[in-house]
Amino acid sequence: MTAHNEPSFTLGIEEEYLLVDKTSRDLASDPPPELMHECENRLSGRVTTEFLRAQIEVGTRVCTSIANAREDLVELRGTVAQVAGEHGLAPIAASSHPFANWRQQSRTQKERYEMLARDMQAVAGRLLICGMHVHVAIEDEDLRIDLMNQVKYFLPHLLALSTSSPFWEGADTGLKSYRLTVFDAMPRTGIPERFESWGEYQRLVGRLVGAGLIEDASKIWWDIRPSARFPTLEMRMTDVCTRLDDALAIAALYQCLLSMLYRLRRNNQRWRIYPAICVEENRWRAQRYGTTHTLVDFGQGAQVGYAALLDEICELVAPDAEKLGCVDELAHARDIVKRGTSAEKQLEVFNTARAEGAETMEALRLVVDWLIEETAHGTTAGTGDTIA
Image 1 (cartoon, rainbow, N blue to C red):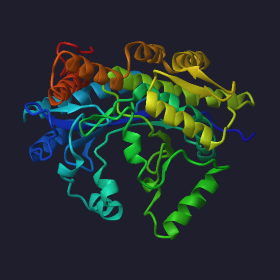
Image 2: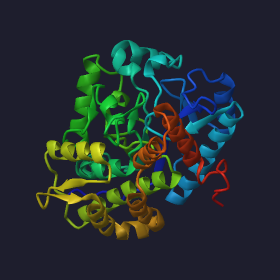
Image 3: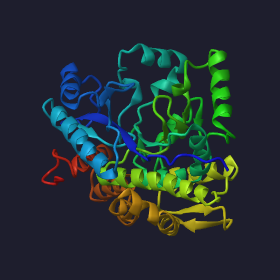
């Protein structure tokens, strides 16, 4: 087995938020330009526009630990909430809005977004969705591909913890992550195939570029991919987490999984690589049920309750959590299952309001209120819940 220098496992987190009007609770389809300008002034290149004007994206610095990532996300979420609040708006960290209509949204005026709209037509227009991307540095290119082949097995387990998009255009979709049904209409999405080397991956990119299909590897939108800009393995499957602590738990778990797989490799072991259809089946189950049902343990060849699977994974990566300094964040993953994901809590708020006599739209507005409060929880913009 080829020797590799140990990866640094530094990480970065990108989150996308929706901007809502605090009065109507609908999306702010035409937010004032001053909002973005002020965010850019305060956050020094860590905030940017997204495809739709009602969206805003933030990204941490390169973080040497989850503790560093926490500091950045507290500042990022808090600043966006404070600036938005000055304009009567608020960010919500949810992968879909409970009742907004995608046909009524305005695009950000940038050439790359105009190209996307021209190429994808209505498929792009429906991208009223937000996600969370986690980058972990794996500096060696062949090692990056090897770990990508193995870690994709665990992506549905991360998706289940993150689910935050149960509603679409005012309807309960019956899915905990409706976002993926929207994104999967795009080309070059989903679970990547297996690659034998960095060279094989680069040859695929070269074919696509050479045929004039894409400009570069950034137009490959798989659930996990080698970043086109950084020496990282970028996890893209998850919904954006409404609670900051949930986002950090998932980022820590992903970081620990990569560390565990590298540790196995050093001992001449590896995680079995199953056919993509197996991972895709668990992806669907996570998308449909979140943490409330089963995923398939393909080693056992049987469905297993999500909580039991998560316990097993946490035990597998416990040494890595100790090494990386994220024991508390890893433990919080179990708390998500006990408390319920954002999708589960949104449905709870909605169904409780309806049972108490609220009309559907009133109940949906109460879901938005809950999302506003939970997005700010743990930040300097929260209701007394600050992190020192």
